[in-house]
Image (tube, each protein chain N blue to C red):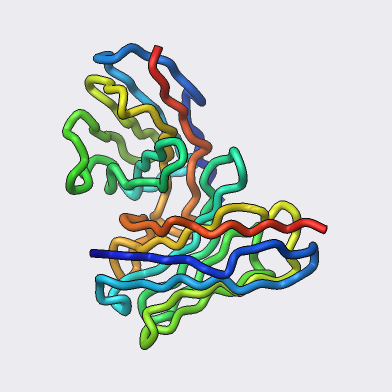
Amino acid sequence: EVQLVESGGGLVKPGGSLRLSCAASGFTFSDYSMNWVRQAPGKGLEWVSSISSSSSYMYYADSVKGRFTISRDNAKNSLYLQMSSLRAEDTAVYYCARGRGSTLYYFNYWGQGTLLTVSS
Amino acid sequence: DIQMTQSPSSLSASVGDRVTITCRASQGIGIYLAWYQQIPGKVPKLLIYGASTLQSGVPSRFSGSGSGTDFTLTISSLQSEDVATYYCQKYNSAPFTFGPGTKVDIK
């Protein structure tokens, strides 16, 4: 069974940094693209960042470019999102999502999400 | 960047009704379009990819069509468990933008 478990969310002050993690199991992690999607309270889905299976390609939404860094460790079956210069508008539930293939960026498995709150 | 729009933003229909949601891309994206369902309080669920291919396990009352810039998600006979917000997403190239969503509820 595919499982994606996010961790690392919490309360951070504006300008602060945080790293989210996603632990994957139940599939061959190194075969799939991995992705972060966020959802601000009461709002729609916003794609944040994607990384191909071998880390050859990384993509970012304009809203986070230069502030967030996506990475993965295929040996540890883990995905990460390093976030810095955090803003109030980054407050959201952050979902880890598996892509359909190594470089396919639609998402057939999602974690339960981790909540990031950016507030002073 | 390509912008994704959806219409309507919300709709109310009766059980058994045929429901149609439209997604438009500001430029052509071929058939690189996915649809998701998010039931309140739940995680998004993939319904359709490749504009018209039903994800395994999704009821056949859901269907998708379109290519280029205009796409449609149809629920042939609305059920109470279909109350949700539906999102389209482009995945031809980054950014892999979602549409703003269409909220569906029961009249």
